[in-house]
Image (cartoon, rainbow, N blue to C red; front, side, top):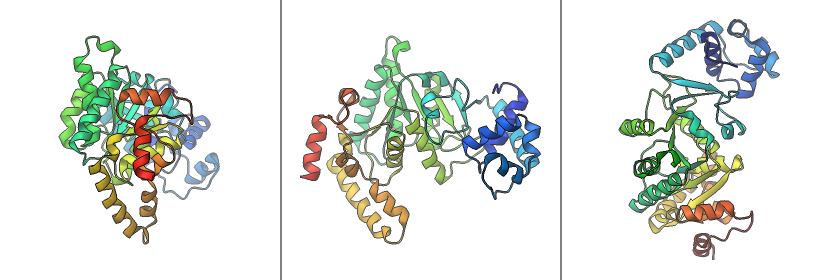
Length: 346
């Protein structure tokens, strides 16, 4: 679909607001109904028939159309772009996942997502060493032509973006350097945390891109942070966890990476003395709550040690990362992995 005309933009925005439908079901509606008017006049029973399942959602087409009109007004006013999941400019790696966003809203150069991307994630409460290692890894990866994807949060996310920006600033030939990609848990017009707004400006000035699956005005609600993490994992061929305690947001990204059959690696800083102490405290807290809360039980299983036990490699730098990426499956020989595994499991 060509979403350059106003009516098609409104149609896509209406469908974006139909949160009770999956992306696949929204595509079915487009193919079956093919016009804005045809969608908004449908009853929920009609929609259920088209998608092949019964929906009990509340649906008022005229009300949602008014929301979409407000969205479009803000998109035009704030100079926000959007791309549909079936469009050529939509990131191919993201289209491959089981639950791709129907629309992406963005500012910046979305074409950079055609190039190699590496997701770099971790805790907000990072150690100084982890911060330094994150900057160095991201800088090296960008100098080698990779884009760095992260979530614009404080801590490791910020350091990942800063490392990429450092590569751009220092490169003599900027056309050969990767850029950085920030994926937001809320709308493009609502940068969170506020303290990273200047960083967001630098990302755009360097030729990077900031994107979200939410239309203008949408807040960064708690559940949307996890939803955002699936996009971070889906955009990249590999996810690198620098430092993260069990059950954290970064570990959700790690889980998504495995679900999408992408590479997952841990930096050695994830197993430093300070990291292990924090992880031990978090495990105890989760264990106490796990008897009463199945969510906490699930978080206990999202533990860096368990992923390494199951074969996830441990790296100390970008050179190690490349070694792991080009090794044959089942023959990972990174010395960092062996060293930490001996400490953890022997």
